[in-house]
Length: 66
Image 1 (cartoon, rainbow, N blue to C red):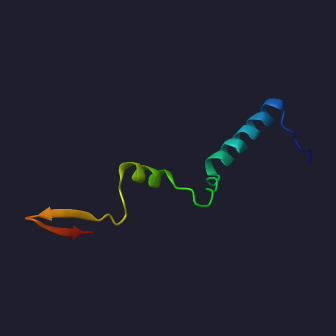
Image 2 (image 1 turned 60 degrees about the horizontal axis):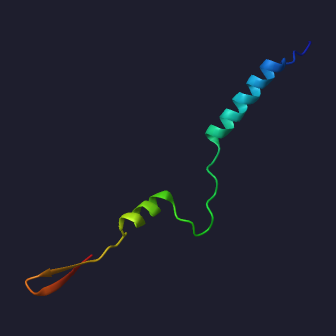
Image 3 (image 1 turned 90 degrees about the vertical axis):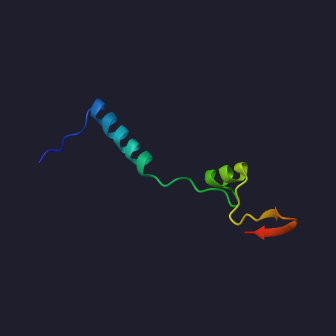
C-alpha cells in the first residue's frame, strides 16, 4: 500500500487547522501568585466588597449592618 503525502497547500492547511484547534482548546495561561482576576479588579474599582459593612445613622443612633 502506497502512502500519499500532502502537497504544500494541503500541509499548510493541516498545520493551520491544528494550530487553530490548539488555540481554541488550550488552557488559559496560569496567573502569577497573588494576581487578581479581571472580576476582582472590576469589583475593587467599583468599591464592592464581599462582606461590606455599612454604617447607618437612624434617629441619632448608629447601627452597623453587614
